[in-house]
Length: 571
Image (cartoon, rainbow, N blue to C red; front, side, top):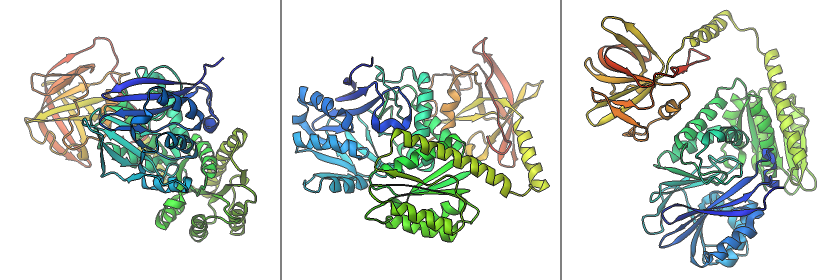
């Protein structure tokens, strides 16, 4: 028998608490995640000279959450409520908050402000709509800053950074749907599966927008991610950032792509489309999800031209399709090649004319369909969402079959090029970190293009990409340490992420100083102290030949980390 819902409260920083509304049951609005591990809805309270509540939970937790606030008399002191996004569930809790604390000022993005005014037509809301350059001073150093991070699913996404605690409140980003007692991610390795699954369900179809969000929040020197669901991210922050970038990159390297064009009035169409996208991404098809309400014609046209297939979704409003989806339909009919696979879905309350319009127009134009048109009345059920996921899988299979039939036999030169790249990718090398220090600047570069070059004197060659080598080891006589990594450790993830200008790559890792003054990674398997003898330009890389002055094995037991590639055309 599962435990009852509760609210777990803990201090996580100066003047800062987390209130984790917990359930061990799968909530109805999370049925699309198809897991039975429960979840937490994390809210945060900063009590400085002024008090701010960040990300109140949805309607499933309204009563127990408000009781927690009442019991600790937080209501009387609330000045702000900050919203990472707005949806009907959160609006239900927000209404109750405003009833108890009418003095509240709501801080949110501009799209969220529009949604709130529509949700509260009879209430004079105090709203502070921010985009990113604003600062909200709560006192005691809590000068909150913001990053507007829209995605097709959460067009009003907002992250909040508190420099006093170095906590970045990320709302949906970096979460996991799992319920336990751990406040932080001490056992982060056990979360890998749940985090990846969460990403696939929520973000795989929005990978381009996620990458843009990651670039924005990289400007904040965060030590903790205050996530909306699951354990807070503290011990695996760099690792999770890298994982998100790699998962986004994997979507872009898929052989086939689908453009999903939709609008969603009440969230039902978006939820349906997300389930279809889940089936596509699990079948290794890249999905470019575009909410046509917030996209211009150029973006939509480019997506149509570049995709292998397209799927359109729309609600029916007053017996019609929204103007934005009608515009997108016109662009499809005038732009998309007639051999591209199509799909249609939508939600409705009474009629469903928008779905019929899209289906008939695409059929009349001669587009083949990848699944039977999906019509959802009101809110999609668990069974309907499963059918939508299956439709996505079916579309992917049809797309792969059509692609094989459609493509002519590759010309010999192209086929040979592909075979050559695959063969070249089978050349493997030891994963190493080249660490160097020039003046006050310390640099660290990850490479697997390392080889012993000479016996006497002992020497190595190292190839470094030109875009990673600006100002690094430019001259003969420059010194560096070659840190040889151990298999099973995550140092490489730390050095794979892009570095900000002037960032010390070694600030968050254990090091010692070599006799040549360069950093040695304490967790390396071994290291070599080297001096550059020659530097040669080789295409898109610099090739260094260096003499090994000294070295040491740091761990007698262990295997050298090796990087295996599928292609010789990229790392």
